Length: 246
Image 1 (tube, one colour):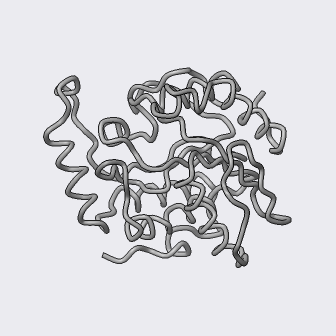
Image 2 (tube, rainbow, N blue to C red):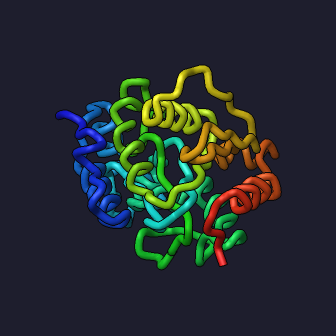
Image 3 (tube, rainbow, N blue to C red):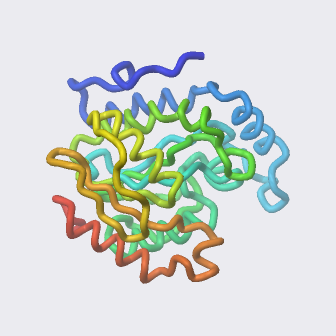
């Protein structure tokens, strides 16, 4: 199965909402990576004990949020029993609990928790996605799998016509975003490296790149990333984007 090009997914004549819908449809239908297909579907069949009553999504998980967003948040990949279960990125797992709670506190979300795809969560001025759209074994996509998904990330970036900034959650997302931006704008390496709280300006007309540790339980439970640290990054991001939440 060939991955469609960014131009095949997105086109300049469509609105951001329609472009993102096209990307979503391409993502959900993707079966490019055999290992990821096997894993996500196996998890959906076997399930976790506390979720036996769930009908798992078991497919690639598309991005979610405001099509007119000025901020794009990029994580690593859906959690096996989180997004792979619910069908919405960062929903139903502890990383998502942390993320949406802080988005609510900064006015980007209308509620603090996201438990299911139909729970009424709405995002304002932010779109959330992952560098890899399928849940990977041990949360570790291969370089080939990451490359296979890169067209979808590029298409999401192209579709968000009001985009001012990209917040990268962790080194993996940062590297995926920087490769995509470097290819899109024909930038020469080396570019700036990852550091929590860093804001990277790559030139006029290019979205700001903002770095944060990933809100994984490993980081939040050890104090590597606290709520105040992440709120600081979000507020810094708000100050640097055109359309702040009301």
